[in-house]
Image (cartoon, helix red, strand yellow):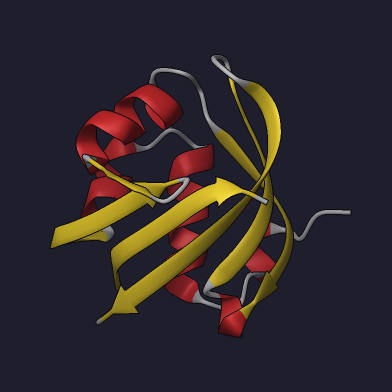
Length: 107
């Protein structure tokens, strides 16, 4: 059972998931702090390069299974055209309504 995106507790994380699922690159970029960072399975990645490959050009989609930490940690069934479907965990650092860091990896 997944959580509807509009029911997610943290408005910034809600906007992040919405931007990913609608493949709205401009909205996604607007949610990040200028110095935002990210990691995938424990390795830091270049956000622009990673999101282009793993989200936008491969039609990424997040189905949120559950949330914790006030909505800043999600367990997600993530799918894209490259890897298919996998269970992932996402953790967000939010500063002033923008994402300053997110970490994702296998759940």
